[in-house]
Length: 274
Image (tube, rainbow, N blue to C red):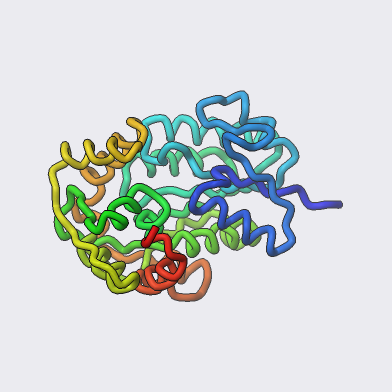
C-alpha cells in the first residue's frame, strides 16, 4: 500500500520550506499547505482544514500568526480533532519556549488523543536574515527594546531536522523537545558576530518599546505582527529563557548549530549586503 503524504503547514515559512525540502530529498510524498496552495489552507478558515488533511498520514503543524496568539490553544485543539476525524494521528507541533499561551496550545494537542511530538524552539537565528531583523542588519544598527539578556538562538535548519525525524520515526511520539543553540548570546553579541561574518559595521542600540513599534510599522510589518513581536520582547526576553535546551541532542544525537556558523554561512549568500 502506498504511504500517504506528509502534510506541511506553513510550507513557505522558515522551518516549513526546509522541512518540505528535506522530506522531498528523502523521497517522501509531501503536501505543502499555505495560503497560496491548492487547496488553500488558512488557520482563520476552519473549513479549509479538512480538505488539506484529507488522505495524509502525518502533519507538521506551524500556527500562524504565532503559537503565542490568544487563538492558538483553541485552534490547535480543533485542528487536532479534525485531523483525527480524517484518520491523521501523527502531529508534530512547532511551539515556543517559556511562553504561557504556547504551552496552553501544547496541552491542547497533548490532550487530543493524537500521536504528538512538540518542538519548543528558542528565537530563530534566521530572524536576522529572513524576517523582521533583516532591515536592521542592512541599516547597520540592531535597535531593539531589550537589555543584555542572553538567548540561545537556534537554527531553523536544526528545527527542520528535528521535525523530519519526528515525522518519520515513531520513537519521537510523546516527546517534548526544547531546541536551542549551544550557547547564550545577547542581541548585542549576535550583532557583533554578524558584523564579523559579513565584514561590515553592525551596532546594537537599546530603544524604547514605543519607538520599536514605530520602526516595525515603518518597515511595512503588519499591525498584528507588530503587536506579537512587541509582546514577545516584553514577555519572553526577560531572562526566563536564559538556559540551554537539549532537544537537538536528544532527537538527532548531535550538537546544535552555533550562531557563528549560521552567521558565516548566511554571510556567503550576500543577503546582508543587499
